[in-house]
Length: 293
Length: 339
Image (cartoon, rainbow over all chains, first blue to last red; front, side):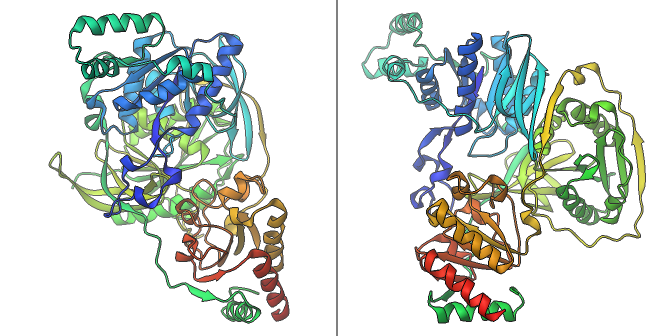
């Protein structure tokens, strides 16, 4: 099972992405597949090819996060689950990992969980280890590659400070994966087939737009999509038996007191001419104030 | 006033050697404890720790909890988490600090999840202040303000943990300053043998390879750093020559590391090392917030870039708009002529 996240592309923040008040305008940022989650998916797909695992991809997010699930299907995932409910909104890492643990429990029989090490919007790297704790299973963080997963345990190589180690852990285990493999691109065949994959809400909207409102039409459409493996499961808090007091804002111990945008210190920069005279003057100044020499 | 717990630091050790970040945190914890009228206490885990941890007292700890067990060496997350959780439940510290290292960021979340505590990752500043939760109409006195960059470093958020103590954070390496140690200070060592359950011992370390870091950027007083604007691996030699000429250390931005011109040990910035040398020369570095976060406390910053609009100039003290292969030789020549 691979957990992924749709994130705003924080690495490419342009001027338009900041509001006049200096906060980040999420809507103006392109939403992308979190990079290290692609590494986790790649590892999952490699294990599928080698050891015959079935790969289920899940994400928690707003309804349009289904896009990353389709992208996972394009690459070869077998099944996709969108965990979505307004009640999940405002979750910190503790509430998020609790919700994800409910999802795993409602599937049952999950042998291996893969997550990217961290998401580029929060950079916390906390959800993976917290999910492992919630499920009471071991975790191996910062995995570079899996060496063996043929038996009842998994052997993986992972980064440690100044080197690496090889750990063996009994299944089920959770791995957090770092940027150490080359995620495969979406296959053309995969895109052709799975661009039609939809969640119930998406199908319902499509039908509404076409003025079909009968529940029977939706049910029929669901049967068709399911038979072609084009059905993206859409699960809410009730479906995964999540305790409402432990999800969303209510289930989050951390509160945000304030947010400030980073204003680079508009210091007084002394402009130095790139001429010999200009540079000689600068070096003299730095030697005199004992910065140099 | 109700009795408040102390300020704790998780001390990271490798082969009995304490990590630099842990000492930085002892200094910060001691400052926070003083503000709160409590004590700073350290907890260190391992096997056959030789007890040469006086340095923790010198930086201000009053007590060191020393937890020893065969299963705690080398580090694996399950026994560490269990031993730590037991001790936290027993002593109820008010605050617990971890270094935002690989170990700290693996262990912290596991412990916070079990304790049902909040945890804020990768803090760059910590303060004590009151907090008014307007939504839930609750007031909290003397809480830990957990300050961290988010959204790729584009915003700075202040986070508060409103549930049960401890208030837990991981803190970025190199941002908290070391104070002057007082070698006359002494403290109490409390030795603990944890009773670890068999489930914590299911993971095996099969192989462990560590190489010392090729460089310690934090100790360098002059850093010459190259970015994507350097252009090629060949050109990167210019940056190295400048560093060598000035008796400084070469470093790089993430873009230069990603381009393969130099290895990650040399990377300055949010995903690299935080430095504060006497002099930082940024060569062909545009100045992304991620990079600036790792170097803007340098005493003097010189930026060399051919683009006069590069954001690096807004944090620099001296700006030179020009081509590196013209400017760098001139600096080397000027310096050699003066010294």
